[in-house]
Image 1 (tube, rainbow, N blue to C red):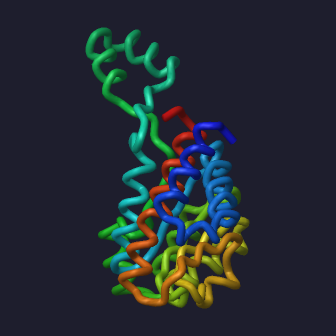
Image 2: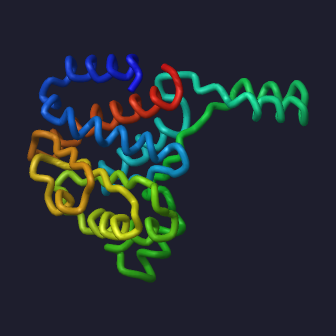
Length: 214
């Protein structure tokens, strides 16, 4: 772990002391996410506000968050060789991304599946179609009991996909289905959501810092 990553953690616990009891789990979750970026990807799902959080997380992963993620030298060279100054413009403005798919984003698929199939398997089907061993599923549910999120976690487990659950204090059913449980200390929905935001910002920041350099 980089010294700069340790500093990120230190600043986080200063700002959010109520989340310090999750220190071990947060570090485990960040490590799982980082390892998945080497050859694999991150899948994210949730409902309602947690669906919005899924999109938010993907947004931080797919482009720069805290750092300027310059494109790799070989891509820059190929763009320059193929397109000259225009290639340089592209290279100057592209950013390296972390592969992250919000399972909430497939509008045409979602409407078709909800119409034709069992709606509770909406995310499970996407895990089945898009997931592979070595991926990580970040499953978000304030109660920990959202059926479509739990089914996605069950499919992920048998596929060799690690599961990180982001929940409220009880953990719900996801507690028994995940590899790492991030159960924030509240049982009130809006307060859980308020604590989920700094948690996943921390995870995005740490993964980015370990992959690149802030």
